[in-house]
Length: 294
Image 1 (spheres, rainbow, N blue to C red):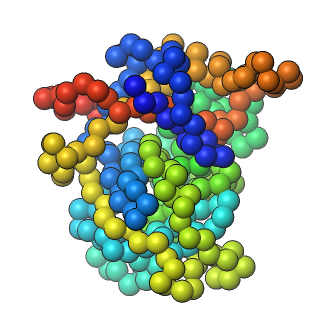
Image 2 (cartoon, rainbow, N blue to C red; image 1 turned 135 degrees about the vertical axis):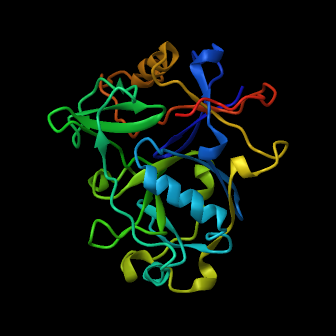
């Protein structure tokens, strides 16, 4: 069993002894929400979150199916901040077939979402936790909940007007830039392949906000696909731990002091962005029925 979780400092391979054994403690990512992005360094798997940003998830699927990103590049990459890809800043305004979207910064709190508290204070949200593996914040006074800008979050770039996101996406590749929470629309997250985003050529943040001036030095987006459109035999599969499960609760408890023989003084608190919900590649045969929509 291969378990992996992306940390802000890199990739952690969790031990197979971690308490994730029961089949019911994993959910398989639905192929319609699984994005397969190939770059020269390797393959990146992302999961869309239509429950939080349905129009942005729908737009991203449509762009992928139109092969919009194939052959484009990561043109704005800032060390410790984000990797931004697409056709280039400004050029997205020249695509009338992809009009700007209304912002989906947050959504109402309701019973459709199973929220599992982290149980630690947070500087940016009244309460943080997980929904289906996504790190989220919520505020009962406002009745709203949203995906957090942790490393690996998939979000849509925009101009000053909140309702100007169209085609350009980005992924935080450094520490979680939480000031972006509820200021840009987050609609997914990286499940696997974060190490390949970390290899991208960087721009100079002092020059054009990190846009790489020499186009030949921009890393190409070779191809992007929706897993549901791939032949079953070629379709990648990936499972996310059930973040409402006992196993994940034990995992979080272990993360509070991952090496007790080494750490002599530890805080009882966890940083929501310091770990991701683990994923695994299933070893069971491809199921005949569709996985449950999340």
